[in-house]
Image 1 (cartoon, one colour):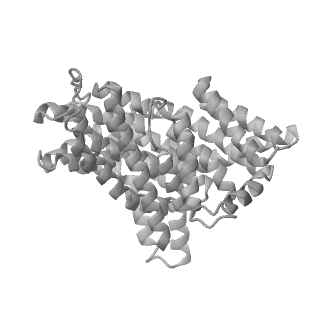
Image 2 (image 1 turned 90 degrees about the vertical axis):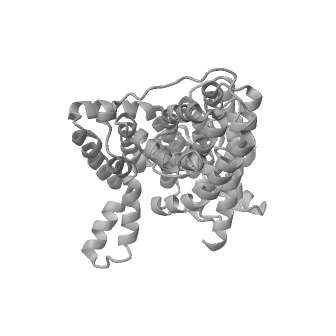
Image 3 (image 1 turned 60 degrees about the vertical axis):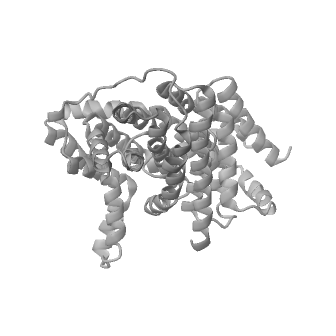
Length: 437
């Protein structure tokens, strides 16, 4: 049995377990990892050791980053900071530039917030504007959701791109900066420009009005909200800029320490706990309750990420990655396109962007020594592929349909096409960047 056939069998089994049998992706990853080890001829006791090492290596490098990011995002949401940011941007832009304001809002809110939290959070903003300006909900909402999708798939510290940074031993700063460059044209085309074609899509009933849960007098200020929500980004950029000016050994060591993603996120968490927590009169006890809730939101994601690391390690320890890499080299296909293609195919089959990205990374990462590709760009290529063509097996598809109260046909014409535009534009941006990087 050829190694490539075994790899395809493993991927097919993962798809069968998650898409057909509806097993948890975490359990599915464990089962297919054991299957892969057996089929690749590894001793049974070595399979267990390899799997455990893969989980440890994966989570050891990103666990603090993921959990701190989830805590910050939860506090940004529950403190009302995200609402303050959105309201201010909309007030500045007005009706004429409404969609551009929504795009910027989605990108800023999307950076600190986990996707599902961000999606639910922006819905009241979208619906309020729909009623205020008497505009179609899909036309108003698509730009903001396009920006959320890009932030979720391309920009660390989101769980999927952050975990891929660890998988490929890439730079979080470079991945973020390259991601912004790729994101801008993608969200412009998939957001305001594409939304102009959707004015005829009408909701089939009344949309709900959702009231803010934080009283106006309890909301943080605009500067505090933006500073706190984007603090990890500001710190990333600051460490990047200071690296050009700090040349002495002590300063360099301090800068390298702060640049470590887990330390950077920990610093951000401490500062945000003060600015959006203690400063707003929230007790430490309640702040901790908020953080516990944030961790619960991503608990399953963490387990899935860890299990995907186990599969990657099996490919490495069985030396299957070497043979598979040699095969892919004979195809004479751009490695970045290959990463996008694998993620896109798995996304089409499974629906989950996170699982698609992690599975593709597990296949590609062991091959990086054999292929000529920048690891930061590979993360963006896989991230772009992981959101391709969202359809009926994706929870995001149904969230959009139900919240915006549109038909399945119109969901395909709006949501699915938007996600596909973002995905293809992301790939195009990555391929263009690869010319110079």
